[in-house]
Image 1 (cartoon, rainbow, N blue to C red):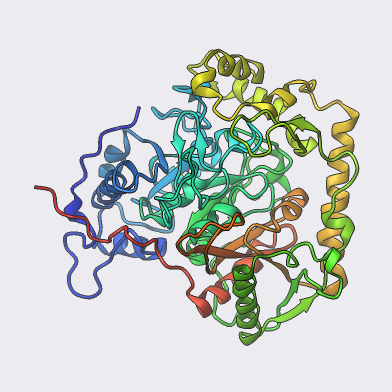
Image 2 (cartoon, rainbow, N blue to C red):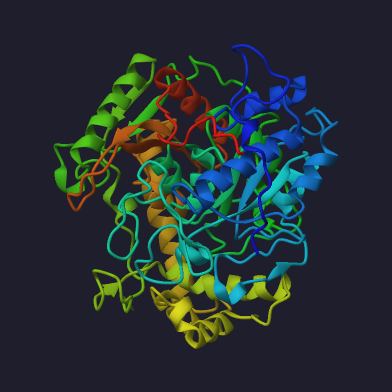
Length: 552
């Protein structure tokens, strides 16, 4: 159950003890500046937590009712109070910093871990996820759990981004009032980490942690004007994250600046005996090293677009006009700051996939415009979903009778009025698999994903053109990098408006993504930082005032 908020709105935007023009407005300040203010005594952990709690009350629960925070940590105030006299340091770099976690990341405290599912309401975890332990060791205050697309958007075909049966619908803070007749946002809040992104964009926390399988960090970061790192699979431990598909699952930071994302990677990137993918991990000592305005000089950036070959121009050839404008300006900026732009289409075999990589699933979603047609989700997702979710429910979940994906399906059917607004077609398809990953079709699909996206796709493209990174508009390149297990970094690029259905909207953000080879996060961060410094494209959502009205 959500905790009552007692925060004093008068704390925003200037915290007691600050004076003059240097006073900090933490709701939209970079994490690095918040850490500096905590170190210098301009902020305390308690005052900072209370400020964010007040904003959650004003803008998430009331006002535009963004609904990005599913539940608050009942111990947040007590944890903050314990950290009031502890300053950030090398050993505890996040001391006093309030962080929100996506509600599929396990915490071994009083907070449930639910993936947004009514079936898991009240379910807790036997321990903290490894990344949560690292955050706590670094001094972070776990403020609460962020709403998400239920089960990381793998429950139903065409489920709206940011909707869960337990948490309701997340709204995009740049257009919170626009919704269709079913209450579905016209401007999407992004992929399944939408609550994590909206909370940071709206100034409800210092930073947040989301997860991605394919686009669930990149898309919400793009839609909300944020920076995120979708890491190489294995850079951040997956242990204790309620899974979708282990081949592609990873957690990542949601922040307001590139430097902030690097600061969080310093904490989160660690080998973990509970996650074999981390054994091959390669990381620098400090991800913030080399973040300079001229770091992009001489870098070869691939733009996968060749108008002379329009049938294969899949990433840029069909972009809407306002997206084209943002990307044209982006490429111009990159050239002006010293990047070498290489224009060439991605090899067809890289992006088109291969035989047997998708499964036909009948769309029975009652609210889908595509109801009655055949959806084609990835085979790897459906087969790994049953296997991985069953293991999590067996090994991590406590306080619940739900122990298998079949139990979730049965609960949802018994509570269809509340739990199945959009159906559960993906879960039904996944439950038909054996659940042990022994099927030939699964092994073939996984091998084909790697062959197409990695060997014939990203590797072939980057090798042929000697590239340091590949540039994509928004989350359009999410799938090819995710299948390969490769990193991507999203950074704000500009603003667009309208929808593909022709509806008018206010301006909302569009990010640009830099993708690269395994373990190249440090290189991508430098490129993204140089671009960020040259553009300063991020603007906070309008209407979410820095100064809240004082309560009587």
